Length: 495
Image 1: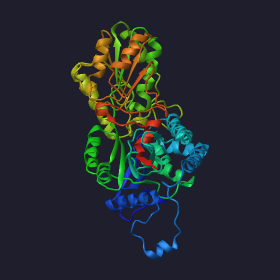
Image 2: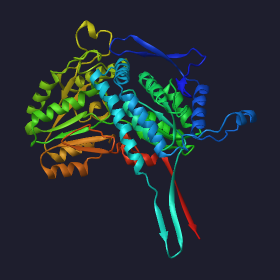
Image 3: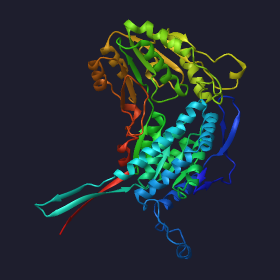
Image 4: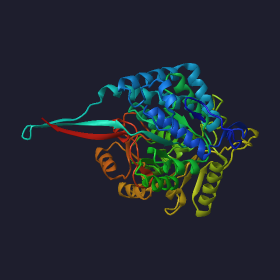
């Protein structure tokens, strides 16, 4: 754990093992936080947020220790300056490579993807640094009443961030950086599968000048820690990325204290391929988007609907691209797809494939654990392509979080849009066409928080990101996310 600006090791011995998914070997064990540990982290965040007395200090300590400016009292320029130092620290080649190696070891993704994820963190920081000079307040004059009014935006306080294991560094930055820039302090709960990257990032942030207690990390059971954070009256906002079931439980608990919530609860993104595109190019991009990070991405195209007239050409091109994927340990520079991140994820892929076979779907690539001694101890699964999946199949109804691509033929755009929307999820969707009218229909009718045209899974720091339906609510990234970490006070006065 990381609390109060330093590594924190509790006295109890209960720990969680972090396993390398490529080898099955133990990397490190991290402590499992007790309720007392969590309260310590919350208290540390509260002290860092505002320097006023919490009532627990003695009179002697209040006199002896000079009052320091809290994180919330610093100006945007001062907080931005700290973030600039953090960005510079992350850009150091040795630091970036160290973080990338840790991420690959604990999560499984290839080093090239891990490096890009850390670079993505830097891009998010730099984007929000650029925004810090553009903040403004609204000012109004009412001449009839001879009054003036304006708004003041204040940070919320202590915010809780609960992370997934698939992209722990990047998703951390989406939540943490706007929270810090606006003056909040944060307690972060990383996934037990991938806590090491987040712990190392916390150490880098602190070494670069982030004050003690502004960014704390607790490790342990997601269910137990999530419930305690949601039930704490000190926590003013929770930003959660994870399963729909867990998100709904947190939302119910948080409602008791009127905590603000942002929920990103996964997706089953659809990709519509019309008959007027460059089929080979489209197929290659679909394969890259689907099997990036081993298919373990909320916004990868999991359900692909292709016009019948180009279906055969599209699937043939997909198979050609899939055949070029190199499976292996992410630490090898030749690897283009690593293992699943956990044994549970591997079991799910096996179960999905068995279900597809029993339903009469066609498995035209993969569908099994790869052969070879190097794959025996890890959680590897071949990139899998399945076609002609029944409409009531779990592969179309549930989120398939792994290297399985489903491709089904459709007669026309009407059927494609209907099938794309025929899900409880609504995170992202894409339409691939050179026809402006078709593109316009897709943008207007696809029920998703993000709709791409002729691309998929492109997420930029300046663009709001989030879902609808069971994919959650609230938005991260962009200027829009800043208001989620601010309270607006309206001031009206008259002379």
